[in-house]
Image (cartoon, one colour):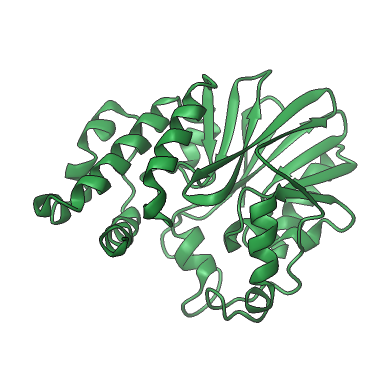
Length: 289
């Protein structure tokens, strides 16, 4: 785990993108779906309070986060879940007594799949047992205070229909979860492409100065995060995926060719593990109604 400080009052707890490093032996979602791409959980800290945005890939990771924040004088924790996918909710048990906030849709999905998530049959091992469910839900938008800072939770349909992003209006910083990634977004629900694009435009209208994704380049995050060009790069990639349905040539093109413009502009950065993500995206797009 690396502790990054991308902005005043914001901590990023980053693990992964290390050649040869694995959390466990054999196929498992921690290594194959999270650490291979690199993953960060965030904390917004002020005046002895912290909002922890996602609890990382294991209780051990989350305990590391809690210990590090307590060393910074944090005494009160609130957990906010970006969405229901396992690599974002696995460590919540490390925050006993904390309020756990999520969209109503996230709470519904976690409740529905709780037994399979706990016994490891949902996405394969390891199981998350116990899976801690949200204690407070919201719809559309909710305001929270952490110390003297106002934090806005905004529900969007990008990557996953239950996604929650965190907007820090005083700093014009957007913590975007999995709604955007570097190198490319992972498309879980291609049937919702139009909703994804509408909500990306909605996030652009916030006029963020800095964007901090869960899956991105640790050096970029450490330097303060991404510009709003990450939104444009995500929109362009979704546009290419939509065209793949009717343009066979694009389906056989390599990833570098498909995203050459954003790569050349420096909006995003090529990371080889996203080749497999792109192939999964193509399968999802071609199988969608």
